[in-house]
Amino acid sequence: MDIDIRKAHSPGFFRRLAALFYDLVLLCAVLMVATGIVIIPYDLIAGVPFPHDLTFYRAGLQCYLAVVIGLFFVFFWIRGGQTLGMRSWRLRLVRRDGSGLRARDALVRLAWAALCLAPAGIGLLWMLVDSDRMTCYDRLSRTRLVMVEKD
View (cartoon, rainbow, N blue to C red):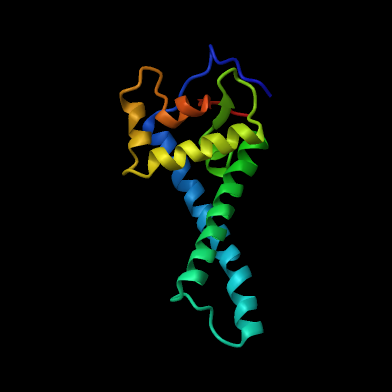
């Protein structure tokens, strides 16, 4: 479903933050399940607890969980442009022309968002000074978060 960008409104800072908070709550549950999928079988098969203190195992688990986080966002963004938090706050992620995201678009946005949010959320704060209320990762990834009408 394409959106007419000329008529679309960009959400405010607190609406974006609220949607992000909703998504983080859901993502915590997903990460707990994903961690259990690795740790429980390891404990049962090896007969010893998962070795969190060994760098190799810890790094492997962290990489796995980073992939799970990426898949979470990419999956929802390419299937309708909304995560659960975005749907709750009536937000949709679209390309600059108003069309839905493809996998490549979602991956590019995810990469830019990770880089821009890493230094204390500065990438999100950018929207407070941007004339179109877009974050720096919106601009860099050529995507846009817009408000949608109630269903």
